[in-house]
Amino acid sequence: MNEIREQDIRALVERIVGLGVDAAAGCEKNGWMEVPTEISARHVHLTEQAVETLFGPGAALHPKRDLSQPGQFLCEERVRLIGPKGVMENIAVLGPVRSAVQVELSLTDARTLGVKAPIRQSGDLSGAGDVYIIGPCGMLNATGSVIAAKAHVHMTPENAKQYGVQDGQTVQLRLQTDRPITLGDVVVRVSEKFALAAHIDFDEANAAHFTGKEPCAICCAGVSAQPAAPAPVKQEKPSCQTPAVPAANGKKQLITEAEAVRMVAAGLSMPEGPNIIVTPLAKDAFLHAKAK
Image (cartoon, rainbow, N blue to C red; front, side, top):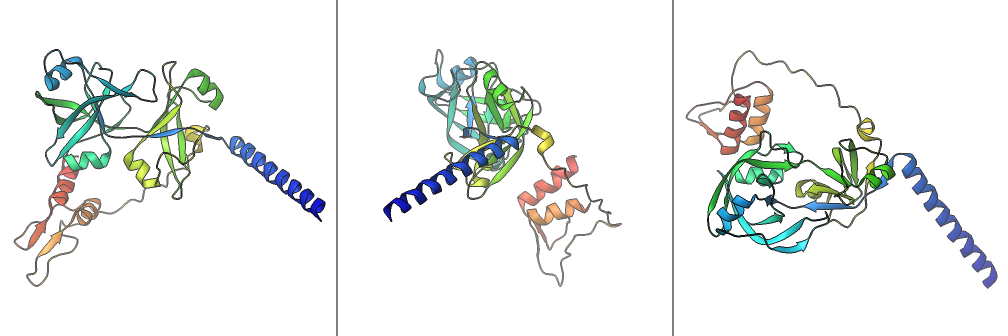
């Protein structure tokens, strides 16, 4: 009986191992390969002049710990960010110094501060937003510095060969969590100075319930692997500019941000009247649409 059980166990183990090999082969065949993935929190990059403005004449950045990318480090120094709608304390400073000040936020962070944060690759500050940076010794009006970093994958040339991708190519990144999400338009960045790692922000991580420990994989087929976007539905604009939900019987009507977005999509302008209350975020939605 013991001999039969041992044979059965051996056969079961061999079957499980075989299934694992088949699954791995299928994954690579379909263009998916695992990649280490990290969450990038809000932080700032500073110039030498900015360091002296914020921390005093002759000041320098003091490394606290190394980051995954060679030569990059978290600093002992911290700063405060101030925007039109809010303040954020204890913001990380990353070193070494750069040629331009760059503030990297999630879109939620940007909304909290009330600042513009276009989605850009690191180093691309075209259309970047403005924010005030406060240090213990001074304040910096960091105009054209705020971006939301585009999800990306750092690779060495050897990594790029292994994954079959090129610098600047876009791939998909699958976060294999209990709430799995696949991110599209993830940029591959290749350099001898890099180490293999994908970087996403906290908005993207929270959407997938990703803690930094779950396995992730990129689809090496690139943008061609992304599903085609559905054709846009053309909406007819109404002939009059009336509120989507008019106030009735003299009662107060509250226009929320969600209602404002629906009205903007329908081509309606911001309603006015003694019985209409428009929330600040709803007003922003109307003003943003008008600016376009």
